[in-house]
Amino acid sequence: MERQFVFTKKLKTISLALIIIGLLAGVAAFFTDKERAWSSLLMHNYFFLSLALGAAFWMSIQYITEAGWSAAFKRVPESMTNYLLYGFVFMLIIVTLGVKVLYPWSDPVKHFGEEYKFIAHHLHYKAPYLNLTFFIVRLFVYFIVWYLTIKVLLNLSKKEDNDKDNALVYFNKSRYYSRVYIFSFALTFIFASMDWMMTVAPLWYSTIFPVKEIISAFVHSAAVIILIIIYLYRQGYFPFINPSHWHDLSKYIFMGSILFGYAWYFQYMLIWYGNIPEETEYYFVRRFEFSEPLFLSVIVFTFVIPFSMLLWNRWAKNYRVLGCAAVFFLIGKYIEHYLMVYPETMKHPVYGWIELGMLLGFTGLFMFAVFSAMAKRRYILPVNHPYLEESLFHHIPH
Amino acid sequence: MKKFIGVYDDDVKLLKGIDRMNEDHVKVDDVVTPFVIEELFEKLHIHSNIQFLAFVYGVLAVIGTLAGLVYTFVIDYPLNIGGKPSFSLVFVILLFVLMVLTVVVLTTLTFFHQERLIPMKKLPFEYPGMHVDKFVVVVPDDAKDKAESIFRETGAIDMKEIEMNA
Image (cartoon, rainbow over all chains, first blue to last red; front, side, top):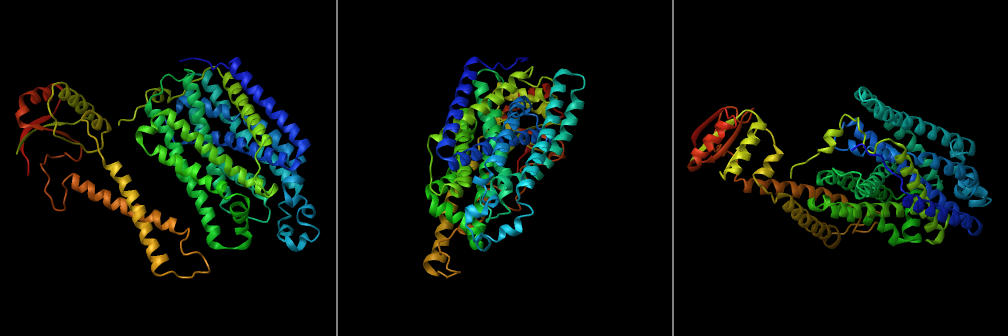
């Protein structure tokens, strides 16, 4: 019960080996194909950064709804937020060094030619918002807001571990600061996702895009939380888990696949129906010029497969099936992020050692960040959490 | 038809009583509670096939709606709306909405059929407060002796014989 997570030597070796592979692939990529390397870096870093932010969002939701069943898993999302600082470093590198390669608005002459004022005249109107100084200022604002709001929650959780008598006080405070986090996260992540992912195609705009990004950050972090819980369960850290826990966890992916499928569809459908050339271009390029199978596989992987897998009550309670559904969902999300960046920078679908190497590298880094943060905490279970008892004996009849 | 009922005023006592009934192999015909008690489904081995039927209705509804939409908008009366294809993406919304409607209506009808419910039907039996704060357990009349002792031991507040309405 009062057990500490041990970051085993085997796990450390694996994550460090993955980081080294990623580092080698990344360095080699910058010497062979600069555009591809920057695209890959942006895509992967954004993917893992939104995992960290979505994890904090997941944790906050548990607080504000006073969910009892999930109290025992609180360490997992808490540790996942540790990636935030690594994400900040990579994002800073991207917006300072790679901005001219990735974002056409920063160097319109190179991307649109000498007559860009006629071809891309909207850039002129967007200039007060889309300029390099304000872009970097915004990056700092986002990360400061995220860092502070998450830090408050983590500090409260650490205090709770050491002070049994005032556990309820810290719990109520956490509930308050969870609301603060959700509010500030929603407000800042809207602009962050627009800045980093939408302005890769600066002539295109969609007001639904940030909503879709918030949904996907929440849901794919839920998928990763489930995978980490499965890993810890197999290692014997959560011996109390019963089918009810898996069933409740599966609801996040089930709900998320519907929600994300809906978001994916309504953005596509409204643009298709509106039929305005500057909006339709985005999807035309992705579907008909880049790769149609990839484009359609997003909805298959994020909606069709997880939805039909978890529709059956008996499968949703089986953690192997649940893990498969989470992996399928993550594959779909990965392809979706790939399709956000690559069609703008590469024009042809490419996936090779650069992308695979960076994926492995970032996975290693994420593993290292999560498990080292987890190993620093005294107990793997939040021993003084007021709802821990309810979580340990969680049971849904039938 | 004669039945024997026991009345509880607390759901914890009720569940204890049901456990004892299971131990002594007394068949419980029905339990009327003011709110849903999920444990009862497990203890009385009630399995519902309504979720599965809802899924089947959903699949049938999707196929049927799609056939209807394709027939009306593509085969029978294709209109040229701004050059968009007749077999279009908007069908997804209609499919979704009509599927929900069909499933809801059919599932409700199935439920009514399974429970033999029709409008204006009389209650099978009545007990004052059975939909407010009392929990009523119905057992067959021939198990009366066993049931009576169980009711008494587990703290039932009332027990009596009743006549069921058809």
